[in-house]
Image (cartoon, rainbow, N blue to C red; front, side, top):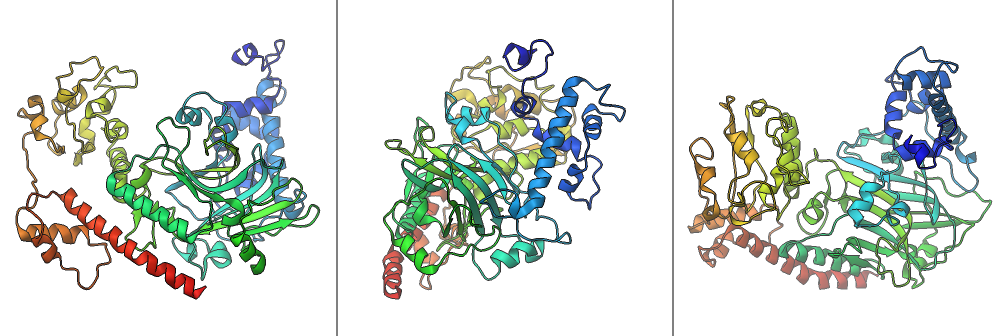
Length: 589
């Protein structure tokens, strides 16, 4: 009925006028796939299994039984089944034809049936994003992204290039990640990673649908504005300075703006930045994807030194790749830097990463709504992964899920800078029912429940627009603490840097009974121990003496103050080495 009211269905029959478009609008591709792969043998290839399905079999899977038939099935179900079978047949044919599947595109890497399965990267989810649809939706980028579900998943280390199409570009792509061990993916280890330092390579091949009117950039975007502290922002700017010095000119970056016009990004002109670029004339066979792309070294060197933004025209097939040895995607960190590893979540928390290539229009200022994207790949780091010190919220969510879901809402909704009381209210401001929001708290036993440490442990000092009194503790926390069920093996911990602002109701017997004060180090051995703990992953010079440093520090400094001293020393050492590195590089050149 809704489809008919919107003019998408025929008023007489009620069937959608275009079943394929109607199915795509529902966003049920994942549900369809789950239904269709039921009964697949473990050692059977998924594509081979799907290619053998008939309309009758599809109707039986979707109908939930085995008695459906073309005559007795509802007309809409029969139409959906025909569309599904037709699409599966096209998919199977395109993969089976290889090099002959589409003029001007290369086939899949040669692989036999005995090849081991694709490696598993449990911490990563990757898919194509519909950037063209996002910019047409009014409101913030967050609302536009949530209103545009991602396209089909993009398998990592796929043996076949995955097709995609945007307003500006049409082609295929591969994202290749170094596996944890060579045995996990011997196919791409032998082709790309053995003997090379790269950890990630992205390969793209296809044609421009029109001539770009501005410079085409390639790089990365983050889906939320970056809010960096003093030390983290200094570290980020130092890394950017290194990138400016050791990469072709034209880098553009931003930490995002308050109005969400420009997403945080680091991008380079595509023509100079990509590692390999091959242009194949129309009618000729382009390079094979999934293996090193060969570009003559003189052409590559001239391209890297050129000031030209490149000439991109419809017709030829462009094959390019870019790789890095500094981004460890599965572990979500930067490594191999002249410092300790840096967690990506320390820069953008739980935001998504996007690999993008786009045309920057004149006066567009790299705003996401004015960019014309040729490629947009969305990468999400799953909460269960080890994200280090910057991923406390993700690890807390994983622990809460393992404990049966209790307090998961509290941990997942708490954000830096928000009051803890907001985590106990719904989006509309209504109080959740403590009896129905979570399972019984006893299910967590035996385990600790650790809400995210916050500077605001109660709403006493900051009234909020909720239905409860602004001077009362969060009601759901009180309900959990005062529960009638046994909590012999369950304990709740909290942390605050403002004990003077604690609500007395939180400190009554049976709630938070014990307060343990952890003050700043007051003796020289304690100061030295803190400095050694903070610099345990630093590369220290032979003359670094923590006892001498501790002796020059007053006893009033906190742990954060000591970390600021260590971080500033690290940044100062890097600044001293940068001119030396540049001189050595110039002499080598």
